[in-house]
Amino acid sequence: MKFDRSILVAGVLHLISLTGFGADAPAMKVVVDARDLPRRLVHTTIDLPCEPGPLALWYPKWIPGTHGPKGRIEDIAGLRVETADGTNLPWKRDEVDLYRFLVTVPPGAKSVRIRLDTACEPHSPEMSGVFTYGTSSLGIVNWNTCLLYPEGYRSDDQPVQARLTLPEGWKSATSLKHEKLKTGEIVVDTVSLTELIDSPVLAGRHLRSIPLDPAGGPPVFLDIVSESPQALLLAPKVVDAYSKMVREAMALFGSAHYREYHLLVVCSEGFGRFGLEHLGSSMNGVPERALVDDKLRKGSVATLLPHEYAHSWCGKYRRPAEMITADFRDPQKTKLLWVYEGLDTWLGDVLAVRSGLVTADEYRYMLNDHVRNLTRTTGREWRPLEDTAVASHRSRYPGQSWNQMRRRQDYYHEGMLIWYEADALIRERTDGKKSLDDFCRSFFAAVPGKKHVAGFALEDVVRELNAIAEYDWDRFFRDRVEKPQPALPREVVGRLGYRLKYADTPPPAELRSPTQTENPAADTLGLAILPTGQIGAVDPGMPADKAGVAPGMKVIGVNGRKFSLDRLRDGIADSVTKRGVTFLIEDGEEFRTIEIPYTDGLRYLELERAPGKPDVLAEILKPRAK
Image 1 (cartoon, one colour):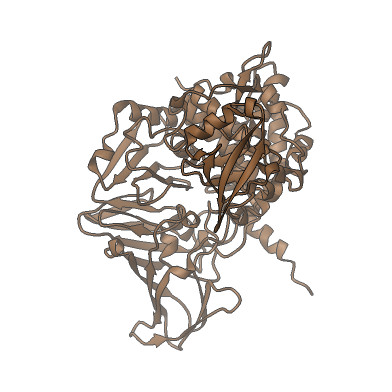
Image 2 (cartoon, helix red, strand yellow):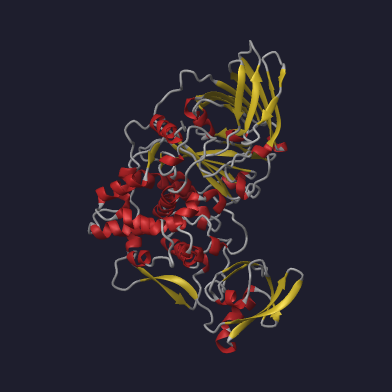
């Protein structure tokens, strides 16, 4: 008889809300020595009660929030298994699943000791948020990088007693309930393996913990660490803005599912830019002075913390049911990421504006960028949005060339636009009496019997929306998500009270983040081009594409003069009379000239208010908290 695995999965999903540990689950003792973290090494000792016979150990593979098998198994730098008297036990790796290790426990043994060494690689895009890394003055510890766990128990039912030792003089912050024995050493209250891995630790010599004002909600802290003490000196107005973010979230959702929440932030040039959500915390990486310099705290930096914070509700507490697994070895089915991440992108952006972290003008500029990029993503013609979610962990960094044709993780911003359209539809159908806020307050409220995570399916989303405003939501979502779209539906822009038009002057420089330079070729020739002349992307169907320009080429001359962005701008302006722009291209080991036919001069795509229509976007972005 063939075993029906779906029965087991259904049982797991039914049990996921039960509290406490399984009666047969022995408590693991995990001692992490991170005193060598500045040398990029972590040493772990795990004491594991067990029975004689075969024992399978797993290194965490599918890490929540990464939407893929992102466990860094290649970072194991030492693995030894021994009995209580120190006898070494040989192990073998599973030849099919490399995250699984097999040991035979000898007769009479009641436990094994596992000694694990972890090498800490520098930041890279694939490691964002889930890595353990440190320098001489600060670091991040993600428990998933420095432990193994036994096969046979749900991670919710596996109790763990954990201890962490940090370099001398370091302070720490985490959402875990713990006791500080001395500076740099903490003992964690017994928690499940799920909660431990969901609760990273931020640490460093210079760490500041700032209580935010939750207006009657559970406590929230902004914990920041940096190599520079000056980077921690936030102005009162910045602290007030993050406090307002918390109050706006409480006004939007009405309740919270965390005991207390920690916004963990690394302010450093050496850790990269990243964010990863957890139920009671988020781990974030920003430039060193991003929280003390108003010019740096723009764009994606300004929306990062609101996005990850909103995930406590959208993605951590309420999660697509097929993304809830028994432990960290089972694959997740991610087709509903356009809800998990798309709706959360809407939530994070709206909270950023409502709290004042982003101005309405800055946000319209950001929204315009998203619309432009999706309008030119020709991969939408053959690949539905849902497929970018299904293949999420292969879609994030597919490569460097022609990503508009093959698509990336478009479920973030295209998903966000779907939710903007849903909000506008709710307002239309209720004469402005209801909005997506009402759906969020209902949908993300506590579900009876669900303590840690409440699963949902598309039918649940549709049912909750119909309770707010009756509409054929099932067809709406399936049309937007399951079918290829020859063009980005313009209804969303119109329903928000706007239209797209070309202007002959760029948006004001103060609307851009410091990393964004004016690109005169974006809406004219269809190029993403760096100040060095390096071409990052070519928009399909635009003049540069038709002329044969390709990603990876380098422009070294424009109209017979050495390349600069100013000369590129002048060349495009002169196209009205010259009927084109001439590039001298460096392509590998060759130089050649490319003539780009173009006659429209400088122009910049922008969102403009549509005459006679209400400004629905402005209504959505209005603050709600008192």
